[in-house]
Image (cartoon, rainbow, N blue to C red):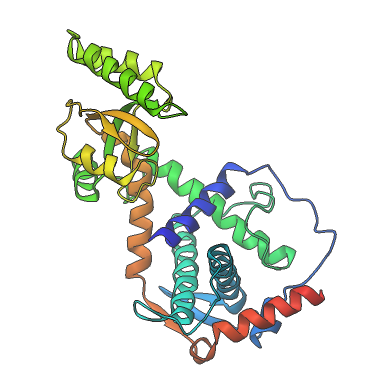
Amino acid sequence: MKMRMTCLALLLCLLLTACGGKEPDSQGRTSLLGEAAGLEEEAILLTVDGREVPAWRYLYWLAWTCQQMRERYAASGTALDWDTPVSGGTLAQYVKDQALADTVLYAVVENLAEQAGYAPSEEDVSEAVLPDMGLGENQMAQLEAVGQMYGWLYDGYCAGEGSLTPTREELEAYGEAGGFLTLDRILIPAGEDREAARKRAAEMFSRLNGAEDQGAAFSALAAEGSDQAGPRTLTPDSTELDAELLAAARELQAGQCSGILESQEGFSILRRLETDPETLKEPYFDSCLLDLAEAAEVTTAPAYDELDPEAFDHAWEQARMEE
């Protein structure tokens, strides 16, 4: 799921950086991906709900996912072994599946936009903001156009148009089932004097408990603390707060405050709030796209089954070094 949400974040990035036209690619290069895979880049490698997808589109995401994996292993100081067992098979199979899921997701967005009668013009498409995996200019433009399609679909969704637009009840059910959590926090960092921070937290907690309007008092005390983010809605897999703080927050009822919670960061007092369904519209939209991608009818060509991610990644890296 995290990898898929990264792909959706790239789509949103493409939307936000739209700038009304592209400058020509001064390098005028062609893609190295087909060479590394031993495939004709325009050959149809798969179909998604009847939409034909050329090999270069899949190879782009395969190269990107391989690079992400290499960087993760390098950061951890661990040797990359493509035969490492993971859920569902080996690491190589995992990478191959992740790249397929990204490719399918982009095709689903294109299908939805096409069915709605929308096609971005050249002026609509943003300059390159996707990771550079060595594609040619025209190929990058085609991928970048999907960001504009995503933005157009999302704008229509927010305006209440299209079949994906949810009711308030559906958003509420989605938020409850998805484990979304809306919190405000008073934070007193431990700093260099943890005991002084502990005493300050106790003093704030006393002021909070003695307040006639606890909600207003909490907001005022939060402004005095170091967490200036204000109330925010956290996703189920959020890493914004310590896991123990999140666990404590889930035990609270809406409007209820916690006691003083200690973590490595310092001392926190949490207040759980009702989640506004409107804040869930964007993640709900993305979850709908992910569901459609999961349910898509995908057919792959024999060449897909023969692709070896390890061999491809090695050949692609060599080709880029020699470019």
